[in-house]
Image (tube, rainbow over all chains, first blue to last red; front, side):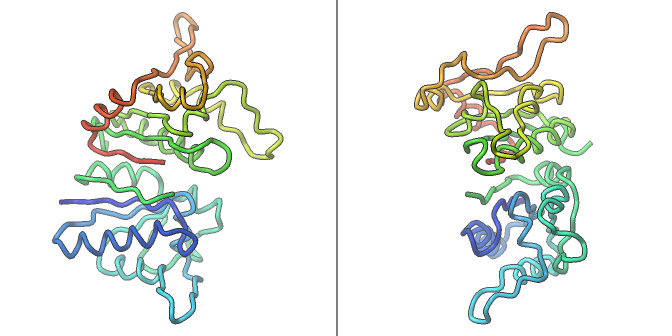
Length: 118
Length: 133
């Protein structure tokens, strides 16, 4: 099945981005395809390369970049990002900034859209 | 254009001003409508509070989005529904909610449709995708 994932919460403060990651991990292991991952609302904070958690903690941003390096399309909403200071200069590798139209396209091209939020 | 014709629902479940969810949900509605999706919008749970008449965000120092909600029709967001049970639980009368636009010819207000949860559930069951705020 082709899945897209929408993340609405920032990392560490809320379980949503961990749950989204674990869901994607499990879906890929079962042979599903991830069409795209879209970050909206505070979810855009998942994309800052300046995130630097303690070494004994999981590195949430790096995990996203690793998925991006595998060829999964990770998109940050430009309007939500601008509000929160997430620009191309602070963007972690293999994640891109684009518009909400990308979310519309992801939904169109997927069998399911799964939202992770509060 | 991408996404043309597919049935997509946006739900607003959270109270309007304590967080940004309702506001950014409206942005999503506008974009989805502009992509010619077969869009429906449902206000339920605390989300129904967003449609309660007579709100003023001036004292909060935030830009209100009540004007956007009152003009959803102008943005081609026309299939707007409200959960009856959620209104009742919050003691909001069905005529105490705002209109989402005006009929161009008659100037009559266009109201969101109040539906029972069971009817909304039926609508949910036939969507291609649901985006939940």
